[in-house]
Image (cartoon, rainbow, N blue to C red; front, side, top):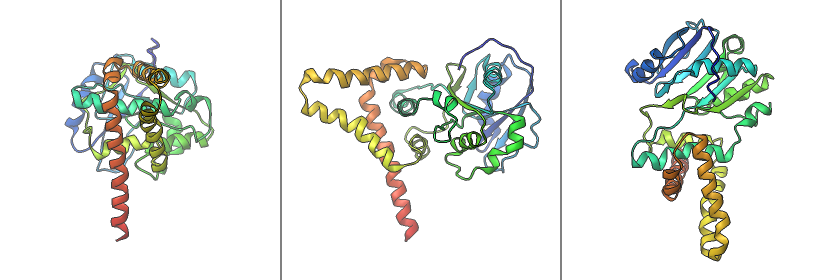
Length: 293
């Protein structure tokens, strides 16, 4: 996401999702108050209440989760990007702020897995539903199109709501785009614990909730290098481990993270990835057996 420096006066309706209390969004509301964009309508949406945009009167709808923080220029840049590329939907992936050892071992996995699996540029360049991904923490809509098609009301699967909306946008022949936050939008105080079931569910969304795809990914990314380390001569390990090093550097810079911790903690992050994905798969299997009983 670039800070394009253009200025706009369109009314933007900010719909902020909180789980229980408005205080969950205090940091986000403070960052909004400090914005250089003042043409805003702020609506608090509680998780327990049915979704509605009846109160929203803006030219654009910006859906945010309560754990995000905005920087100056962000809303101007959203509008500019949407206008210049004639987008119906723009999703932005907030930059991670990893504080503490455990957070550094777990949170970078979300960007690492996504950027390794999916070239984000294809979302805009190829207008086919198969090339669809999004981040529910930040969704920016052209309000006139949103009111016309009512995408959120048509979503059936809650777990992958944002991705399903991108698919619907593409099915209507409209354009969608997904960008990295690039220091214009951050995750603040994370509401998800690194080892929580909700966090592992978020990782599984990168595999379209397909267990087989997740297992093959673990075999390729983790079991592959381990087998090569055992079977190959040390001289032949330069290429695979060099590729791992370069991929960590590339994904770290793209996601505005420091590459050194990600490189040093790569083995621990891969162990965390195995544990999170396998625990999610196990919970699915266990819950499936319980349902049958």
